[in-house]
Image (tube, rainbow, N blue to C red; front, top):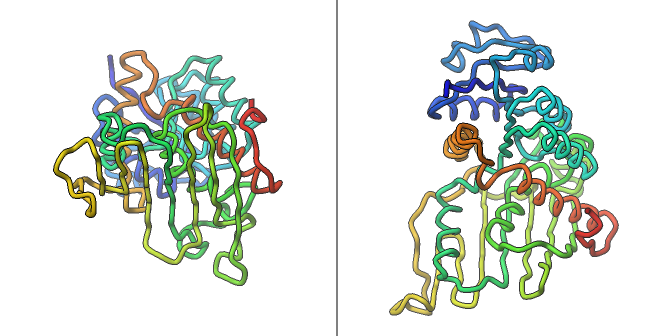
Length: 346
């Protein structure tokens, strides 16, 4: 199969990280970008080190039959329209998180994708990190036994003056603390815990009189989750107003042991001290810089799946849709001050 050509829509910092990641991917090349701002192609070549055709009209880029994949890196509120148009044009799609900002629109994206039959990758790229791969391996090896409790928390200061952007602080384009960033934590929890969520209860808050005042939505939320069948509960915190270093926290408790980030105890391993943690050395998810995110292994898996004619592993659209369904339920719970059943989002 000949190499696949990628066109990126939206040309901010995330797009730059995607371009750099694709340089190391076998079987695909980024060949075009689309931005509302006009870009000089010679300047793009100098900046990114590869020739890129510059579009200002998204429909023109979609009309190019030599572009096989559309990579959506635009503002959150544009993701849905651009994904639907790409699906209708028969393009495979990469969608940066979140896929959209409402449940109703997420269903419209799903319908367009199902109708077109294109392959889709959603950028919950942490599932491809060494940290999450190690965590999942510990679970699958049975070292924790049957999980009954989990906490995954996202702490990342995203102040308007330190890179949030004017559009991200607005509710109509940023959405919520979970949608704009904390979705990585909720997706990680679902990746680790297995099972379907039955009910969520969420609370949210925004600090008054602070540098986060520009946000039109609450910047910290905490969500409690109850899983179907009983026997599993969990918690996710999302704070984008914390004055601290970046921290992606994972604490999993099972019938045979516990994993806290990269520290663990397991009764399955004889001779371990029960009063001290043992440590697993791995590359942790410890930076909010998109250039440090594991896009390369995720994008390589996506290209491989297209070539094999199979669904994208780990971060396919249906898996990401379920994560977003839980997020929408959590945000509704925080807004209305009540527990929300996931059955309300069928």
